[in-house]
Length: 110
Length: 377
Image (cartoon, rainbow over all chains, first blue to last red; front, side):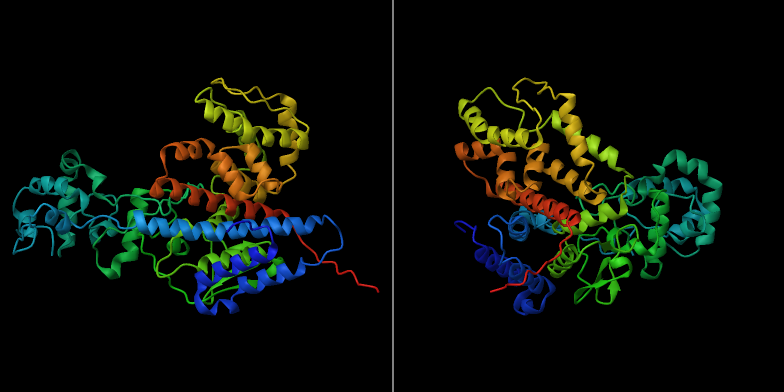
């Protein structure tokens, strides 16, 4: 993503993110229609420095950042921090031991 | 070892070390529901009435012997989000109790462990703290309720905040964004990725009961220890970097708000004159409560009032603001290398939270109308 300053690229990136979230039926989702709507509305403007357009551009960049970073954060979390703890059997297996089995069950278990 | 016989015939003190050993097991017996003053965890068996009788007789001995209420479930909070859900501390579903009594037991446990916890049905969605809260809905949609407020519906059911209130947002864009967040959950619901939902919940519930003045003073207090104003003396590379990156932002905010904020490298930080604080106080009081909630969130994440205002005023983008906030870390990364599972992880999390906060502030404080100008040739 070299330079995202053109609104077209921002729009396409956002829609790509939405597709990654929702799968193939993303075109019927609310966010898709809303985003496209907003981009169309703000495309044509009379003034040279249109404040609403700049605000919309900033908002679109912010939303893109939100989607991209939550996705990356979740991916990194699952990759590095997602495994949880090992069960006692696995821990024992790490050093080559096995847990003892008590045929009658432990005293407080059913 | 049959427990009932020991209760009937032998000294109940046999159970005392038993209870001490079983502190990690949370089996709340039926007796507990009947007489909730008995807090220790015991084994569930038949003949509960007899158990009850025995406990009444031996209660003083048991209280001295065992660790008393230590045996009940640990309290863990649902999502480590830090958005200030001080009131409800959900209890960990650790018990192996029978299914039929499950919800009742949860209530009993909650009443014992956290007496302030209002255990009623509406909070069940957020309060079961086991990490595998499965996605229980198919579609997410929004609808407009009374007063023009938008609500989010999960599969016919309306979304509620953790304290049971109906989840309403003032504008459509925020509702759609929240709906997208809920829609993005696959299989399990991960509350720590749903930043906008959390912010809306905080703004709606206001669990710490703060009003605008408190929030504004908290934000202004941050100015005294603002990241941008704290400079280091060495290493020289970092000093240079701070001067080049942070000074322009300071310049900008001083020009925009007509204030003076110095930067200092002493341990006490810069001296902020009263006039500066008054200017900022005046500016911040023009925000609504919702926007202030979002702004406070952003300030806490970026650790800087200046950077937050720069981002809210659209002078900086989210990525730039995060980069400036993490300037020293970036310097160290460039020097010593990047560690993906720590640096990148933190950066993405910071970006996500900051972006959510900024979006929240913008959407809460704007109201947009479209005025079509007719083209006349």
